[in-house]
Image (tube, rainbow, N blue to C red; front, side, top):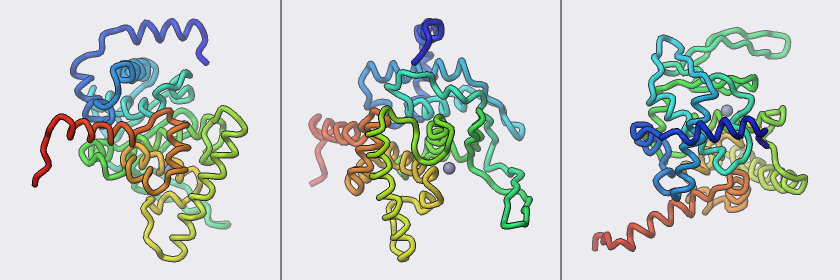
Length: 270
Ligand SMILES: [Zn+2]
């Protein structure tokens, strides 16, 4: 919960007018935004204002940080915390954005051998207050919305997962019963994905999700927001867990919008 002083400060930030240029960026970045009701749109905009006030953006590799970059990333990150009456990513201080996939110095242990090298990265979430993203990938995901991939949603799901100290595929949940349900549903889905991959069968969930439970949670978060109808149809129990955690039902929003289009009399080709 928020303390009194912080709540008052946030209220002041949220009461500032939301620039029309920012609203256009949010509408491009978050395909669910136009489907939200007025209160939810206003709440998301307020979350974006608080996020931009509290977090620092740094350009890596010579990238100049623009409003397009800041607002796009903030809007997608804040979609994950809509309707959540807590601080917005309390552990996060800094978002570093590189122009493209960036090379990271990595040290990996393979038994007694330490492998040092440089690796191409699309994004990463550091539990100690830092998210690193490549703008090429972020802007590609905006243009290719609906493919099921979104690096910002992925990295910020890791941030939520890390809030309880471990990136283990279980973000903070309100009760022991919810934890047990979460573990049962996501555990079964994870086992099913591993079994399919072991058998060489095709999977509708990105195989990268089978890396570990933390990656599983981040990958299915992308699918939940980006391809909600497909996820609900094929993995209803998983969809329900994510809908309860994210306090949002994207599949209903998307299908409602489709229904409304038909109802307005746009005729299907005969
Ligand atoms: Zn990841």
